[in-house]
Length: 434
Image (tube, rainbow, N blue to C red):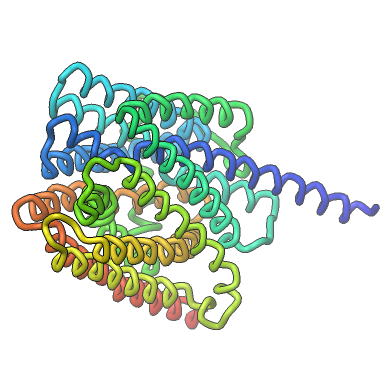
């Protein structure tokens, strides 16, 4: 074997290890997170909160992410992606246990809000850090497989882990709604140990971060986020898409649990809520499987167009779910429930296609040194939307109805299409100008 072949073989082996670590950490993190996704709203409603109050608690999570996005981006872009991830997993485990304590010890809204802010901090430490770690490492070893393919594999792992987590959480919640939270904290310990021993920063050189220089580093990285994110003509419209989608997505997902049980006329069937969340995961996996063949087609060569069409179909699915509830009787309707489930699955299918395409698309326009920062800025826009959107849609659902809130959300979701078109035009201008 000559030197070139040996080198190529070594690079390929290292790339496989990197992708394997990425998939394993993604699987454990998603499994832990998704254990409560199907029961979280029911848990809070069972603690005596109204749907509006539930959305306020969820908004505290988004606000926590909003506040900590830039500071945690500083950590990821200085101390390292691995340290950021480990810090996030630790905070998530502690915040999850605090969530249960708030219910068991009667801490009320203040306890839930505090726990949600801690969870928001934990997620910001993970947001963008793992994606940045993966892309940096694969670029360093000159891995040539399209990033869409790798992210799609990550999406499939995410969907599979979400399927297991949401179904398990639903059935555990049927016994006691607090059990999924305890299990989640335990799985997060496993995720921490895996990353501690297997994840190494490759293609990125960590720098020391002194407390005295934290403000300076924050300003420096925030400036980089503005320069390579806000001022980048392709990236800027994608930031607005995150704002639009963040405004509605979390409300849509979490309100779908009580909404489905209401349409079914069986508010006692907790496992159905878990199964619905699992359906979203399965649909997402199916969508991920479509990414590779789609990107080989003529349509797939235009990522912005794929994303715009996906946003339109997703918006129509949300509007269809709203209509299914408008005509449903107060005591439930099997046809309305079935329609809602099918359209919810369709939404998950197209989201499974668009998410990895969008991940690869935005990463193509970000320099390595600023990758975690700009991805955190992208998440910042989504958090800003979630922080305002969840209470607003929660108020609308409580004081008018969930279907009306879904109509407003579906229209809002469709606004992503023109922003994707703007990104596509900016990309074509960049190519034509060389």
